Length: 442
Image (tube, rainbow, N blue to C red; front, top):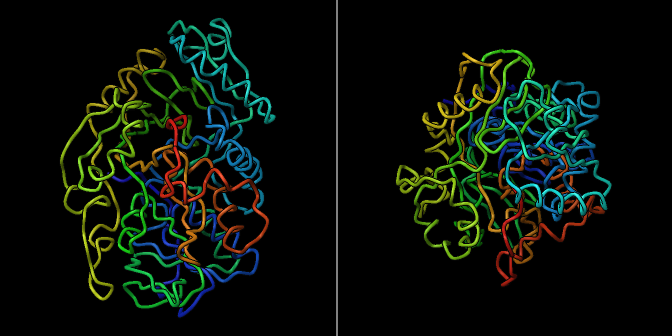
């Protein structure tokens, strides 16, 4: 079942033209639209389903610098600065609160990783503090575990996925952006090799630039036009609970389970590193590129062959621009949650926090977390196709860094000075033989 998301009234018809068309009304696409519209660029966002209907409303709602890959850290820092002022700036409730985040572990390897990360992070000005066993206990009152150690980021926070993207969408429309829901982009058109239009199920939108921000579906649209994009998805399961006693006001990541306090008094709960890898045709074809990622994260994976093999975003499907596309057949990617993981999460939560004994799940859901081989997003132009830009492959980090990712995408599309160094996010690393290295931190 889909998690609840605030509905937003938008335009029913596409415009005839726009300077920029954005495919996808998730966090990255909507944030890019907001920054473009504020700078006087006409922009149309076209969404096959509803605003924030897929992974942007299915994540944990963490807004953090803590344990970000160093390549992603400048983007995470900028995003957090945006989050801190966002409610007042747009006059809407996103749910953001600067509550701090705590990681706790009994693994010496985890502690060593966090210590090494902290040395790099402090060079970037991140407030990160290692915690002894006693300090973890003090930070997590009511937690029954005896932890070896942990790490605390007091300036990180949390927001509500069900509210945040909708709030940004309203702000983008107030700034002049057009958003159309329940309208799929089927293809794009070029003239002299450059983007000149986007074909939707309602017809053609003439444009000078296209930003593909379609989450797990981005690769399928790009492959349709012969553009390689290394992207693989894993099904995640999360849930939120009924309102309960406040054992934390922020977020806590533990080896077995993660929790995040919600505005409604419940908790969003996830199982870090757990997921289902569904076998797909495109997944098999790009297996070599993801081999190192698979080896690093296979411990928490289960495997299945399901609907995704035939008509999901990693299926090998062809279509015509004047016919029904896969994006119309599946308006919202809404995989069923793995109920055994929900039961496990509830059991672990009550074991670790006895004060939550008897707590129940209010709603559970599945989501498709799309990743690149190095777990770093692509936010970049495609040099071989002038006018084409990508903001995808966020590898489970898109909600938290989304406001900054949208700003960077807008900078690159307009040719403005980039808000952060765009080099780590370049598209060409996917196709030029670059050694992508080990996958970044989760």
